Image 1 (cartoon, rainbow, N blue to C red):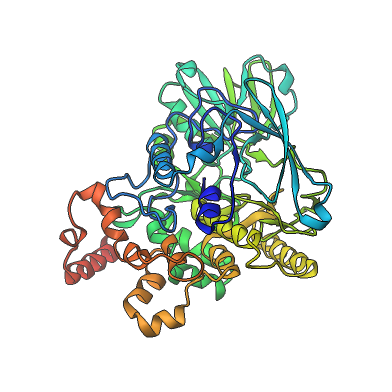
Image 2: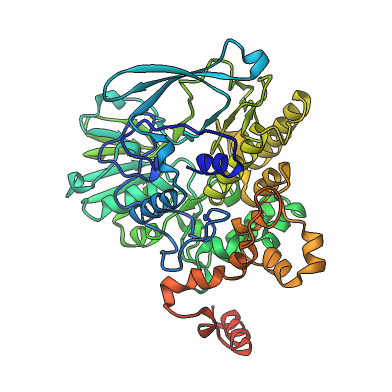
Length: 513
């Protein structure tokens, strides 16, 4: 829907959006059954970023919205926003894309031949389009590992992609494999009804809770330029150690886990969960190392000699990426590097008339990144901005890959890992939407302080550039009021303590904590 909004905002386009299922909304449209090639969520899923940090750049959330919305609230807000902008009329539901190929006249025009099938009638149609935006993401095709003896296990084995309700696991022993966000969500929810849940992990994880200091959303506190500035000065592992020592360990020391994290927090995907620590302390979830092998009635964990009996195993082992409808050779992977310039444009095309949206792994919210990608792609499609030479694009991909190899744990998606603030700035600078901080410092010091020392909000990318928004500054300056409203139901200045009292409390914490 962001793609449609960007195209309409620019003007001169007639967008057509193909949606495989019967409703728009992508990941956040809950479905009772998993659909192949479509991202899915559990009935209890809550968004991992707060409303202000994950907002669209010219569409601040209502102050009444929860900071971390449940999937129903998020979906309702997305659909209402689409209705306000009259975007739904461009979406054709129950339409599966079968193939996207370069048209016969692509070399001259850059056009594409797109074939789709109506999933109800089965009718197949083909049309020619001037451009294509691929917005299917990369968390829709489950990756299932294969352990020794797995075929002999008589219990149930499923991927979290197919997990819905947890009632089927009442009074049963369940093993959850994987300690990412979906794995922790599954372990926590199932433990409410199961006899016992075991959480199996190869490398452990540093877990962030949604509630941060002073009850603020964690990302509203952490995602600030003044904090991520340290990445330009210190090695990533040092910055990670500081965050772990000063922020995470006082909440729950990760060194006391049965399986300690083998990588620093900024070396793997962020893991968000509010309840796993209490579940570990209560024993309803027990952490275990990786599975050595399966037996008929359970598993043997690494380091164990006895069988841990189990009724079911839930694989929370991530997703692989695939674009089965794309012409072969459009997106290729060579030496573990995915051929996308800034994770958006395929480098092997003569004309930049196809872009991939949302194919990133950010440390931060994904919505603002996806919107910036849409805005950039729209400007390129409109012919207002050009891409650099293929040599420069290859260099950019190689540079990102080298930096990521030095920083992150091994992963097949190494090429698409990005830091939220730095990547947003990079994309925004491609079409003139990155804020001019020097100018703002001279002309609007109060706004400058908010941009540098406050949360890095998406509205900043509407201060200038194409389709800038007059309300951007106001949205930045009033974000705290909208963030606090659903908690306090009153103006945030009524919640502030005296500065001297704040300082006195900090001194006391140093003495007693």
